[in-house]
Length: 272
Image (cartoon, rainbow, N blue to C red; front, side):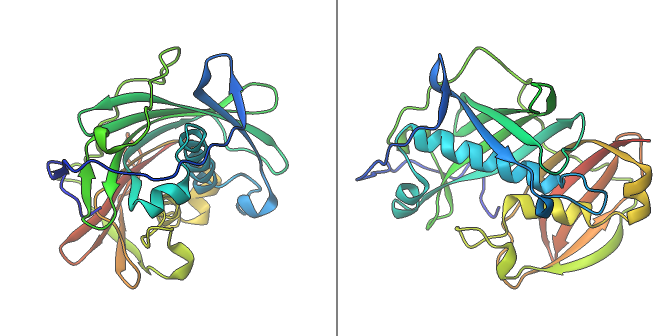
């Protein structure tokens, strides 16, 4: 994202209309949000396993529903020219899902630290066995000024859920300075990759990371996690050079850059 974290807008956000909707909630009310998603064939890869980007998709959808349940729908936020932007996400993966599995996504806000918001996730299969867990950092953004808004700009109260925690605040990805990266391919942002903010969708960045690996690597290695930091927003027409490392003890590092811009840095974690 082409936004400086210290560049915080103090203007109070005003939302004229709040649309309330409810799905599945537990005894703690809507602090802990639970939503079910079916894995379709189109969500899987050549091994008939769910794509990593699919997991990010359903996590995003669950988070949108959670905020909407508090009285702030996506349409209302767009009309107010506000949006949520992920900064860093760290996901631990036990296994990827299979076609026709019914997944249960649980998500909750852990409150904010200054202008940054923390959100955790857990994903379970139909037997209540955990497939994945993730920690993330988000910012509320003025979509026109491209500035991070203070929490007071949000016209609703987002109370933290304190009954569970995946872990501490995730650090940003740091690729070792002495690690050699080689260009895997180039990607140009087109229509299919854009979200409703007009930028490359968060989950599509993960597809870019996964496409940097060969099919042989996907057959030989077992994915155990993803750590990604979004640095700048990629817009329509921009070309991104996808660089990757060889496999290290930490995993395979991937960077997306173009000219003097770094769009993202990530690490895919594997075991053989």
